[in-house]
Image (cartoon, rainbow, N blue to C red; front, side):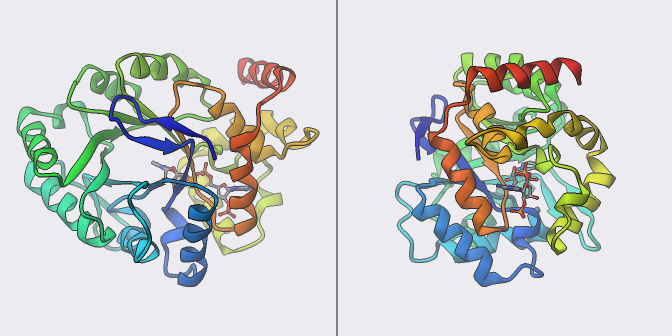
Length: 305
Ligand SMILES: NC(=O)c1ccc[n+]([C@@H]2O[C@H](COP(=O)([O-])OP(=O)(O)OC[C@H]3O[C@@H](n4cnc5c(N)ncnc54)[C@H](OP(=O)(O)O)[C@@H]3O)[C@@H](O)[C@H]2O)c1
């Protein structure tokens, strides 16, 4: 597994990160299997794990804590998120008040069983919520060692643009994958400002493959329902990228991750997986170089999309 610097934080991370969210964190997905995936990721050299206080209705973060119990955490960067929480009945509530963010960060430390958070990311804040009071509270969390690095996860380019101009934020997480080449100028500006850049949804949630061909287990039905509810645009765009899955010597997922990793301004491509074979297959993307022929094909499909 290759590693990259996380912007100017002084931290180094595996260039592939394991996302502990969604189906992975749900009680319907067995604890033994979920923990086994994290342990396998550790064995494969992953040092970056991404979760969030609200992920999997609040179940993902403590589950990651259980997976990391008794493991050597010294080389790991454990990232979580604050500002959203599970409000019951499948609802996610937002609260970016300083008191809520501080309480969330302190709870995350306990859930994860760490001394401090490698990275705390605000989870989808509005620009107006990044006010002086909140930034002072975040600076205090850093000074107390509760958090090492500070970031924002947003899929709103205006928010990321704003954060690029704030020196106290070290990292941005954006939705970057083959379907989102329009993020590249933003990523370039973030990297030039010294921010670490995380590509969330690095596999475009699997939407480069036809939906019906993916429906094999309960997790696939769950991902399909989420796609219909929230990601129809990705479903439609993905249809132009079926060729990724017909390449010699490389699988479609490896090609998709290889595309993200070909961007040197990305610190880490974060994906989710609930199948061991997927995790193992994806880990091999770290050693792959995307051929110039495949990169040309991807660019042509992006222009047509
Ligand atoms: N989605 C969001 O809105 C969001 C927002 C902020 C941050 N993030 C971060 O980004 C991470 C990844 O997001 P995500 O899980 O939504 O999307 P993703 O990683 O782009 O896609 C996950 C989907 O890809 C499938 N997959 C993984 N490896 C595969 C392989 N080798 N072959 C075929 N299918 C494969 C998974 O299937 P299996 O489960 O069957 O392995 C799952 O259905 C999250 O865990 C989180 O840390 C996501």
